[in-house]
Image (cartoon, rainbow, N blue to C red; front, top):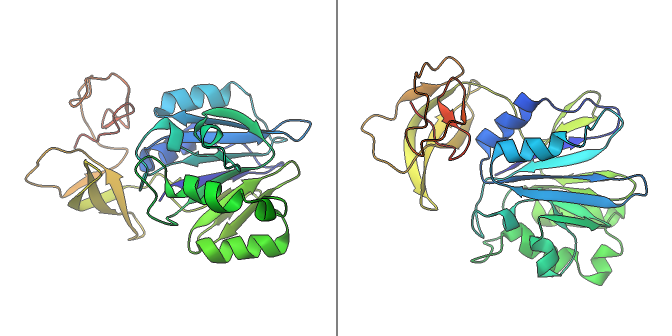
Length: 269
């Protein structure tokens, strides 16, 4: 499903913990975009580890004056790789769409599912390449009527488009607004809540556990691809695990009292 984070000028930059929660809940890569003083949109993406994302993001020392958009992906098509992470420049050039660092006039992020995608291109990448980059669309991309048409086409998905002047977000319901509507999330997966886990499914060669958060909302978190007799567990900040290494990949990059591995995104219960 993914999550979009929009920080408009005047809002505080989300905390490292907030971004980490976004990544844990949407662990298939991250990226961000911002505009410089002349209005050019800069895209940095392809971060498959949270530490890499936050190291690059924090190096810019963004503050309340900056406008930026971040995206954390939960893959549904096109493969789990740096190229399919968001944002994307609005272009039909596949090389530019897959670039992990570029400059452009318009950048876009997406939360949801538009189509099936292809073997190596996500549904979002194809949507940008085949539809949004057409001359008649891109030349009017921030026209209110065109944005309404895009919103109707992708609904209930959500997208955000950054231009030299503003960030335009359209699509289905579910946007969460804070700080006088200057800090906007496309869903609530930025909130760190305890999750009661029950049934698991196999998807894309990995195992996902069906959970309910504190409000009873269904979600899936990446667990592992191993077999376990009992999946009825609780994952929260009080999980007490005394391992110094991840039991799956032996990484030392452990979070949440050593229960979540930042590198392989597996959860030890």
